[in-house]
Length: 101
Image 1 (spheres, helix red, strand yellow):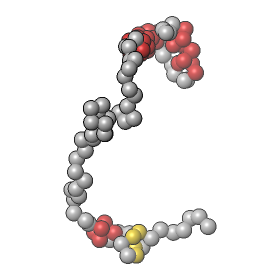
Image 2 (tube, helix red, strand yellow):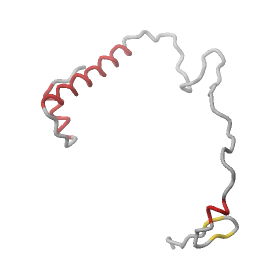
Image 3 (cartoon, one colour):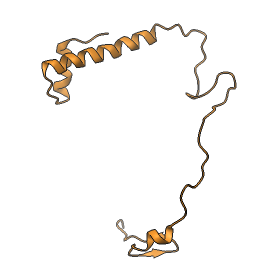
Image 4 (cartoon, helix red, strand yellow):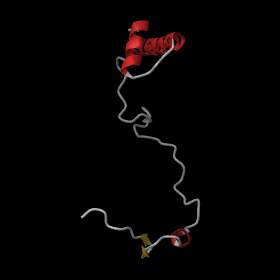
């Protein structure tokens, strides 16, 4: 699939964008480049390849192996200092006026 200059003009009009002819040609090349990449991906033979249930799932181990940092507090608790300027606080919570009845 590839687009023409008329397609780019129509899309720009629908999106309420004003593109100069040079910008339109640049967008045409970029979008058609994207479609070329999609066609290359479609051309890959994937027969016999099992779909992954998770994008980071390793096929060999069968479990998602995420590389996440440890969940460690990086700053000390400063609740009292942060709540000093609050108009109303109760048991460490900010009190706000009721807005829905």
